[in-house]
Image (tube, rainbow, N blue to C red):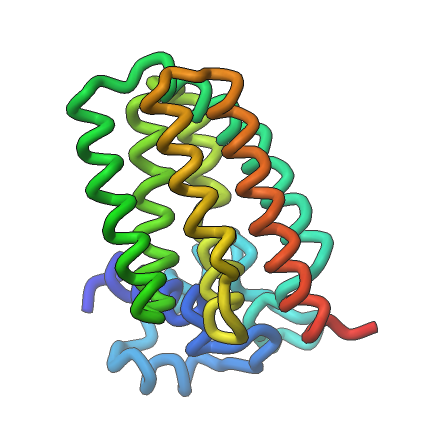
Length: 213
């Protein structure tokens, strides 16, 4: 496995909570888990330390980064501001072809939600958000969001593993699409902000269950 593939594979296991928050890890068990040698693994660990997915403790030992109320609040608050404006720009820029594509994505979100496919529900939801970023044309916004994306995805995966998203999440995506299709810029911005802050409330409920007092 190449150094990049080792990095992505290890990161995915953290995002998916296969390596759980606060779990102690070491090079030997990670190398065995991924089936790789120590050299690409060390580089992957360094990159994930820089991105705050792995924490090097004062004694030199490694652990998976915890999930915290403070971090989830910051990530989702930033997302609500940036993605609200992205939705506004998407409502302004979206073509008929974009609306068709978003509608297809919406069907995938709805289908996965109705069939209890939690993993794909989250994945399709992120694809929907990513496509809005693309058609908004706001490249700097997109770059900033990309830095938060995997941390945000980790929280969303955790919510899915330890409970359900309520039906509201499905309905909120529908309403965002409706506002964009109607070219209602104010409505799209508000619908997106409300949606992300609603997701924050759900994520906070789960994280409060694991964060130490």
